[in-house]
Image (tube, rainbow, N blue to C red; front, side, top):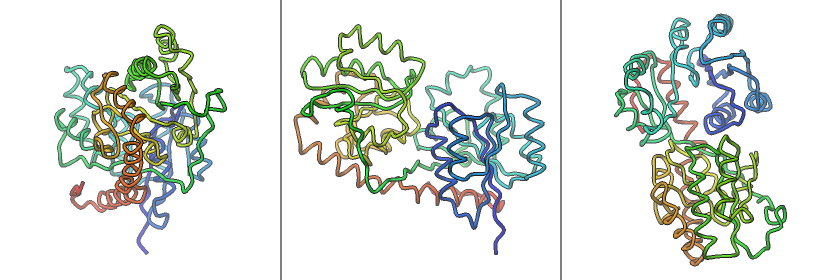
Length: 372
């Protein structure tokens, strides 16, 4: 029998589990246990640690108070001495890479920044970023768009593999009854989004879109599911636009797929996006999608096939697309049908197979040739 690969995920512990954490849980749940021994080291307690424990994962928490701590580093060193890893997937500071190499592990880092975000990094420090990239054996990105961003930044093409996210599609999706919850008449439309309330996600554009739609239709309500530092500013924006009676803030919803299934139209108007699992969830929920034509959004969606793409920060175009869906039942039905069909490209099985192949190749010390 082939010896199992000891696979370690070295991760942040965010307050709200997002795409990176959801993917890590899916990999834990679906990688072949006859081929991999999987464990996690997190830099703090929280919902992610709880979800991993609930999934039966081997989780160690080493508390950290900053991006890099000598005390945390020493504890990590002791942990690796007690339980060595063959392959480490790194989601923490790259400053941990030398220690990981000293332990004999191969290192894969998942890159999540887009050009908009990473290129705010001061020019004087980019040489250091590219230098430390040499410590990593292989990089994973979630979209071809993101790969091109990093190649432009100076990363080597041969070291970057594209592995699109996959989602676990339930047999039955039961929509949350938002109309009953918020006292909305049955014949009214719900147009919603689900995202962190941050600058990246373009919720202000969603509200500007809602204002334009509200000027034409009285029978539409708007849902914003998510938490974030911009909550009070967005509430003030809704009030200043005089649409606050039609805009509902739902806070964080763990049952995101069921929430999206309750929307009549899903909008995802982010300013930059590596690849959004939330768009895949909307396709699975059977909710027509309008998204900004940027980054990974345009790899998940084909315009007027399984979704509608609009220029970023363009509420006029987004409102026109919503109006088109509301007025054309056949357009809506075609988007829904094609959306479900397109999910065959983004299955859990495909994502897990591609990760598994990469782990095995890098562990074998053979040249890793990207097939993506």
